Amino acid sequence: MTEYPREVRQRFDGTPDQNATALVREPPKGWRTVVIEDYDPAWPQRYAAVRSALYEVLGDAVLGIEHVGSTSVPGLAAKPIVDIDLVIADTADESRYVPALEAAGYWLILREPWWHGHRMFVDADEDIHLHVWPPDAPETVRHRLFRDWLRTHPEDRELYASTKRRLAGETGEGCDYTMAKSDVIDEIFGRVFTAGPPAAPSGPR
Image (cartoon, rainbow, N blue to C red; front, side, top):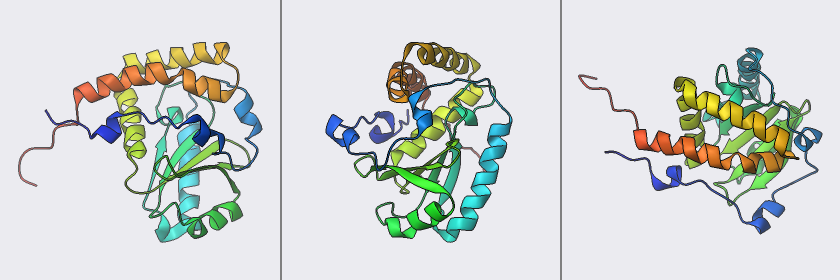
């Protein structure tokens, strides 16, 4: 059976020293607490508006944009934050995109070159988390796999929602909440990877 590449199947955890140096500026105030809300159909509308604006700001530099995270899964309770994966050619060359994004109202929050070149921006309202990746980053594949699985597997969607609501009440700051979700995320990914990649369509192309 065809398997996903090892770098897709393996969850990445930065070292304490790496994580301690990732912050570029003070974290947003919204990171201090975790609030889980019922699914809001306005979330994909918010994504669509941001997607259009990013193409206007960055033009041909955009190689791909995806709505990921819990707000991209219809019916899933979530923090009211729209996560977006933005793919560009070279995240290390910040002069190609950071000034344009900052002029559009985004602030660089995280710089994580050891995590597949990841950069993260937050908008002024703190309801957009913009994750910037190079084309070969396996994390973008993981995000799409998790999103698509939850969209089509209601049992795991409910498991994830109930776990998030419980952890939001048990944990403190957002970082603690994020780490606490790792076990259930790994459990769901186990089923994703056991199922394997979808079969290629048969017949003439």
